Image 1 (tube, rainbow, N blue to C red):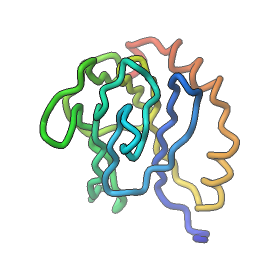
Image 2: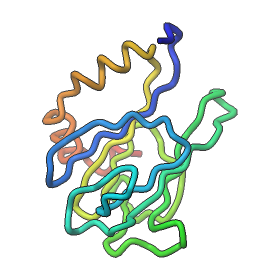
Image 3: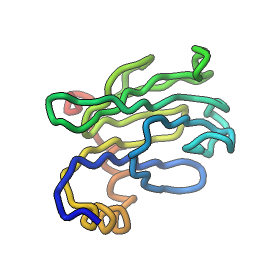
Image 4: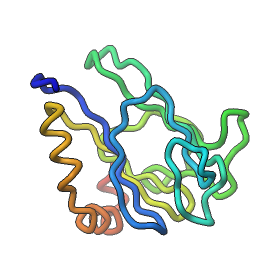
Length: 144
């Protein structure tokens, strides 16, 4: 395990099956209702292949960032769309604190700087109710 603090990326999801945290490290994630996706979104309002997350280098931080694209790898948009911070979204780079809607599945993207051990402990002790409440009560004007 690394004791050096590094940029860590986290996606906290709330869907029909409950809440969970996903540490984002891979180069690509497919998101959707189909079980073959890297991240399965449990909701009938989500397309089988709803969105794609791509990891890109971030020269400013010497780390990386994620680009979220609505739809599948063939360019087909999702049926119910993707929204980030209450705005329709086709593609763009995510920022710390962004609230994402995939149909009726809600998510929050966050970036933290922690050691691997701190990050593991953090993901195990997340208060999902608090995060979900924050996401539902966030005023749209405070998100930018």
